[in-house]
Length: 462
Ligand code: FAD
Ligand code: NAI
Image 1 (cartoon, rainbow, N blue to C red):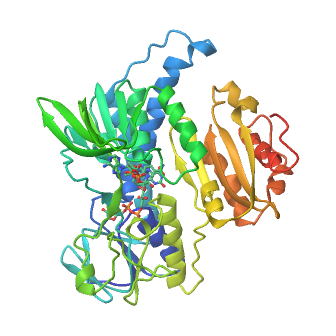
Image 2: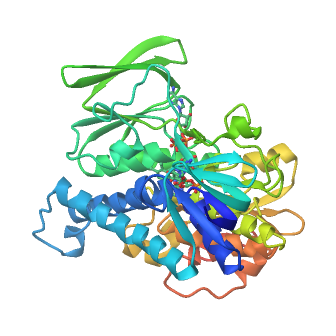
Image 3: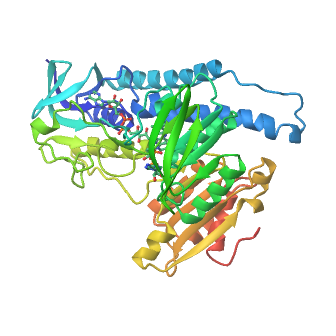
């Protein structure tokens, strides 16, 4: 038995970041992970492998659509799925090994096995008991089931199955037009599958800016992805190598169906707390299964904290990381703060989508007077040079004070560009602060400045 200041259960971006920061703050720290590899969902079956496949499929698509336009001839590039998956795995391995290295460097003990909280200050790892003054639950999430749809990882796959296909399906039906559905749908559409996305709502990417939702939908349709909106999937049946997705059209309650070689279930994720001992410990959970916490990520049991996908809030790796650092700091006696108002969201489609702060719908609901500064990537020289002029930047600023309240954009490198606004918001900056900052030419980020200018006297290149 070993004794620690902190034991973190779960080695995903919430858990491993928390562990490293705890160790850096002088706390004797261990991190328990049961899947046999550090990095959690994110590194093993989430963010990182999906971005590797998005990169590979985007490169393939570029070779076929834009290379000749630039005078790059003769490249009839073909797909070798085996090699693509090897590349994806090498990216995962490099990242996972990196975390093991960081644990050694920071003297975090890596306890391999499934952890269970057996008493206050006690974690059993596959039966071996370890003591800790503080325990952090960072056990993440898993795919939420959908009634009538059984994931067999053959005909019906989840995101993990979609990250490991050995051939491109002729037809792929995606259930759910959220982030996973659109990212993985894009991968296989680019590689040649006929992709149809069936979505319950009348729009895609719930929670995003409405104008972005419409523009992204139009763009994805142009890329060949089909959408069936306002349709509730009822069940999926598999027979003779074909899956049939049965759904109800909400407008008239009529039944319809689609056939496909593969069906991807992408209707959301739920907290993973199985075998953790929550009930026995009296740790409170919400009706949705999230571990309940206060503003400082403390559970109702003293000395036990929770972070990341297993608690409330957006299921995002960087949100989990922020909470990991904050909890480490709280345990070490520091402030431990997370600004939940400035957590960016990115969808890695082409064009990319990024968003931070309030949407127009939210501001209207709050009755807050705001102004909109918009700029199209059509007016950005760099974007034109890389076939990236589709999309726009929209900055929302307070009507009276000019303080930036939100930003929503779709376009090249949107996921990088958004951070200019995140930093600005952290500093309480105005749109004019961005507009008066010299931006290098020719860069995509000039579009951010132009949108900021549009909040004032007007953009130059519009
Ligand atoms: P997790 O990463 O889920 O890690 C929890 C870990 O705890 C797991 O490794 C699990 O094995 C372990 N564990 C659970 N219970 C126990 C136990 N009892 N004992 C020991 N170990 C245990 N987010 C983004 O921000 N950007 C993206 O681009 C992005 N892409 C995604 C793509 C896909 C396909 C998916 C599925 C998710 C994606 N996400 C993305 C979401 C992101 O992966 C999660 O928000 C993030 O991983 C949450 O981190 P976490 O540390 O809370 O949990
Ligand atoms: P999601 O919550 O983003 O989207 C699920 C979609 O399925 C919704 O649009 C919903 O309306 C729809 N839906 C639900 N039931 C349905 C039904 N019966 N029929 C048809 N449609 C139905 O969930 P998703 O895409 O599974 O992602 C899970 C989590 O992973 C998200 O919270 C996201 O934050 C995270 N993630 C983040 C990424 C990123 O940051 N780039 C990438 C991938 C995942």
